[in-house]
Image 1: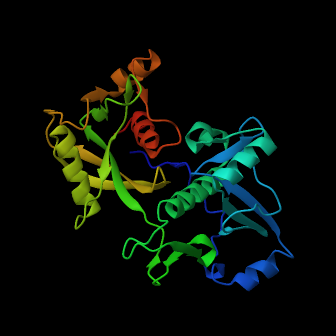
Image 2: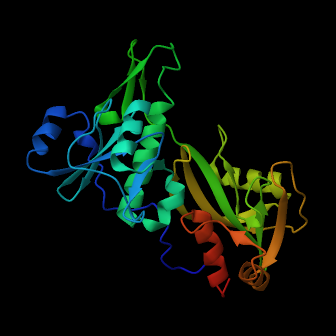
Image 3: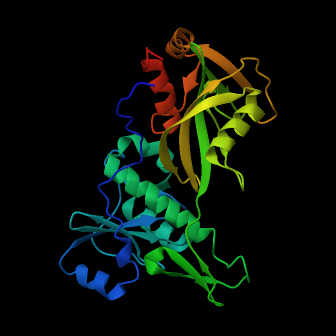
Length: 296
């Protein structure tokens, strides 16, 4: 693919996570006296979107919640997420006059910084809600380390869990390989993807997933980029690869897999016969990058 800026969505280097401060409760409280602090209410991984949905609701004073979860610093500004329970969320919706909504609906309306913070707070919130009890002994967990560690009554510790997944743009001469699941919107196609299994390298996962889903064997696997994807807890590892064969056989996971030339894909997209992954996904970067790379 052409060597150009990828601009993968949800990635930013402006937020300093300042992880060394997470256990320094007194220092964080002292910093609040000289720093502007922003508190974001989060409910089941959702936020309240404001101002024609170009931003999410936050304020400079804390919310009534189980714990204030320190996200980090942008310059001298401190950012916190505040996980709300059912009653707290309902009360806030009445107060603000808007409902909590999914980031998927409003991602492209947010600038890079806010999109990254929304994604970060979503992932942290879902991890906390899905780990109310210790998987080792079953006792209740409590939040520590500014929301980044769970500890049960028997002192078993847990940290945020991420599931690595590969996603790959497969090409053969002047064609690319795209597939679709039956439950996707009509005419939606995307690059092939799947989770990395235990004991497997990411390159092995690329080869296995592509062959399982399409019968296509690949080589010349090259890293493209990564994207945090807490829907609910993934990290997308994107690659390009070249096919060794072109005879497709579809498995039960996908409804359809096809080869497309650039001209075919561009015309079908223009005529509405195909839609590709949304612009905030790394799959979109892979597809558009291939379409624009005329030298490939």
